[in-house]
Length: 226
Image (cartoon, rainbow, N blue to C red; front, side):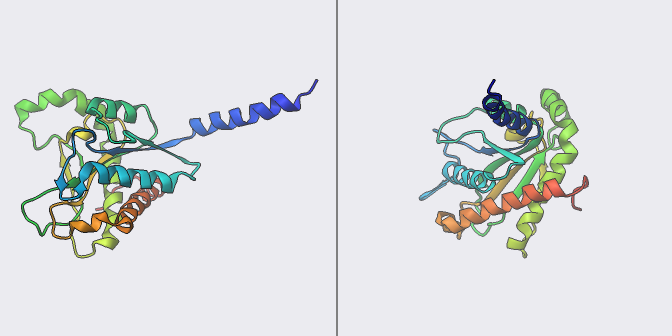
C-alpha cells in the first residue's frame, strides 16, 4: 500500500482546516458603490477611493497567516446594508471597519473622523425602533471603542496638530454588526487640499495606518485609550 500519497493529500487539508479554525477576520466595508457615488468633487469619487484603500489594506495583509481579509464589495457595484451586515457577521472572531470620506461647507476641514455605534443622540421614543440592532451589538461596544481608539492613535503621528475625535453616533453601516466595529472618514473631499487623494502615496499611507491600527488592536489590552 502506498500510504505517502494519501498522507500528502491530507496534510494541506489539515492545514487549511487548522487555519480556518484559528482565523482572525478583518472585514473592510468600502462604502457606497454602483449608482451610489458617495461624495464627488471634480475627479475624486468617494466610492472609488475607499475601494482603492481597502484593496491596498488587503494587499498589505495578504501574507499574514494570522489574518483573513474580507471585503464587503470588491468592485464598483451596489451592496445593501443588510448584505454588508451578513458578510461581516459570518466572520468571527474579527474586526469591522467601514471606510468613508466626509464633506463640509467649511473648506478648511481636513482631518479624519472616527465613529462607533451609539443610540444616545436619538430621542427616547424613537430608540425602540433600533432595539434589535442595539441588542446585537451591545456586547461588542467596549471592544468597538478600543478598536476606534487604536485607529485614532495610529493616525496621530500624521496629524500632530489636529484633535482626532472618536464620536458615538447611530450610523447605518454599523447597525447590527456583531464584531468590534468602527467607521472612519479619512478626510473631507471638500477641503482645499483634497487633491492629495489622487496620489498613490497618500492612499498607501491611509492603508498603512489601518494596518497599524489592526496590529495595535491585536497587541494591546482590553482598555481603550483615554
